[in-house]
Length: 225
Image 1 (tube, helix red, strand yellow):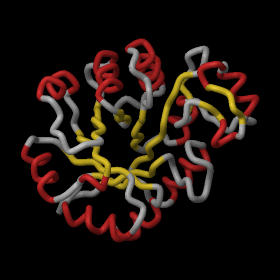
Image 2 (cartoon, one colour):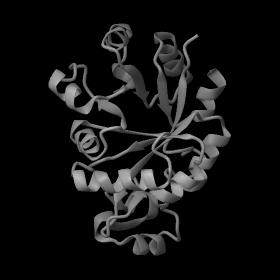
Image 3 (cartoon, one colour):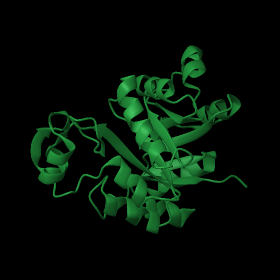
């Protein structure tokens, strides 16, 4: 029987603020196999959990993350934005899907990879984002497990696949149909999808035999599974 990996998107954002330690812990308590979170670097190069470029949407502070040190971020959010190291400690023993929006520089990717290694989490972490970000990760860590994110039906270029060497192809869920699922399997990749939040969409994708679903409603997915 095929095993479906249930991945919690930014933790459990319907109950707790996304990308916070409470959100990650809640998702794991609900049965998530893995948690996905977004990582960006502060002004002083510390990897922290934040999806947006600024603190405005989540923390009502119109300050770009890249203009703030890790200590300033901690003070402005009362410790609400965790460091990557803190997130890895909070999820110890569980898989983590590390999304790297905008981290296209090899030195920046190496900062993230180094924190994962120092935490002893290299064997349970895998990385996702678009081609530029995953090229940076592959250059920083030749052994990294990668889920190459795709936002169109166009097949990835063979030259890109040769360099990035992804284990997963990570598609927007609305793009996935039986033909695409068959193509991904034929090409030897695992198929990951993001982010269906309704039972109907989840059932359709499970029926197509996808290998992993990333969702904001991890409780719904684990109940269906």
